Amino acid sequence: MSAHYRKLENMYLSAPFNDHFAPKIEVNKGAAEILYEVKPAYFHAASAVHGAVYFKAMDDAAFFAVNSVVEDVFVLTVSFTTYLTRPISTGYMRATGKLVHQSQRLFLAEAVIEDDKGRQIARGNGSFMRSRTPLSPDIGYQ
Image 1 (cartoon, rainbow, N blue to C red):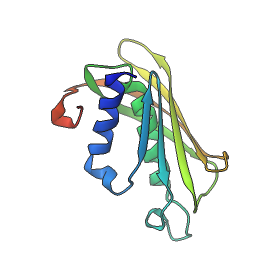
Image 2 (image 1 turned 180 degrees about the vertical axis):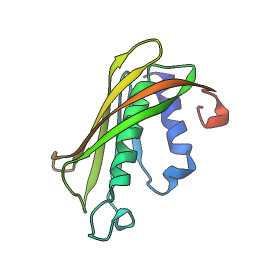
Image 3 (image 1 turned 180 degrees about the horizontal axis):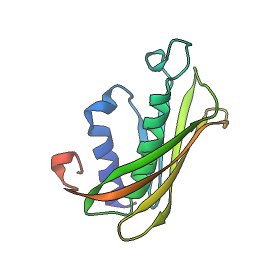
């Protein structure tokens, strides 16, 4: 187990925005998995999870897949494309991110969300870059 991966997990869980979602996260080299329990608080008017929650789960999973290989600074999402393929209103959402390309300045990652029956409910991909923000206890990296 890498201390870097555990520190990234702690950083994610310490972010105030995640208090609302109570996610679980696991980071490994070039990969990350995030689990959300589906709650009515995430629903749009038609009683299914809002697309913003899909985006957040996939962006976060892809982000941490990338940051798993960047050990000195926080990475930033440059762009992210989201495809919503199935609605969900019960159970769990499991977002899995995977680093698919890296160069000196650009990182590309993909993410997929599956429901608790293993059905794909969303897919996305994004580009990421290194920031100037050091990974430090100041941002929860501890």
